[in-house]
Length: 456
Image (cartoon, rainbow, N blue to C red; front, side, top):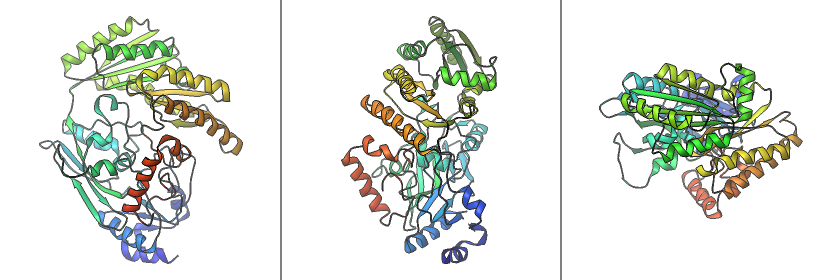
């Protein structure tokens, strides 16, 4: 392949690999789809990315950028082969400024590392995707990642104040700045955040940071039914509280956790609610006491309260282990990050039960009750069997049709990628799809950036 020699000339031998295990490692993410690239390029700078894309656009070679590969929808699968562009080596935290309350980072920085570096300077980066110890800021930007704290603090997009992006032709674009307000022209940042690597390759990110809240409290409550837990969520809001996180888990999720982690750590009941509060010490204590009283009136099977980072994290350990507990069942876990209007929480969980009865799959629901983003996990065996996969798709046809009928959306955090490509037409209007095509055509006329995904 003549590309390899040319790219080695351009970027150096250590930046280009065609070794079998390297190609395999860059063929997919946490979803089941995989397709090997012809080459993997490891960029170390914006200049590397720029040189690569100039070459790729001239030669019409597909380029699929990737971070740590912790996505759930096959977003970084090099569906048309070509070059997998790894940004993992671009992992410097260039600056954290307390005075300006900003961080300037490269895309390969691990999310938890940035959070820790900000915390060390008494600053706070709120987005907290479940995979934050493994996923990168660049991947978070590509998917507009969320997490439990979205309820109070918003998603990745709410923290991005400047981007450096290399376009398909190799031009480097800078938009935004290190200021917390900016209305200079169109919202180009919003265009690139969540674009799943199809409009450009992000090479530097400036994030706004917040003051670190000095106090934290967590309440954990178990209920006999999901309806009781959902009612408790509505009552917390009705009383004027805005927790940083409100997480809900159903019966199947709790049973899997009991089998995996042991009955002692998992409270009794068929629904579990976690409420997190942060702020000043005095206000957190008084709010936590008031919410505890409110939850107590709902007759919980068990209720626990913790204050301080270490003790709160002990209660959160259960929530963070749900995915692993579900995987420990030996079934394939298909994580659907649907969002419904908040009043439809119980409806969604009850609908998941009807799907379970209709199709025979166990279905586990848990996630962000505060913003209606409940992860509906279809648990299946033999997912590689085409018949089983077709049955799963029919289950998802029903789930997504109902979610859309309620005014919800088919993805709140993970993106469309390959996994939801089948439902992209149902989830959008013709006018919206046409506008996506026009934007793609304008920024990437030769369709070299992450081709084969939903805009094709």
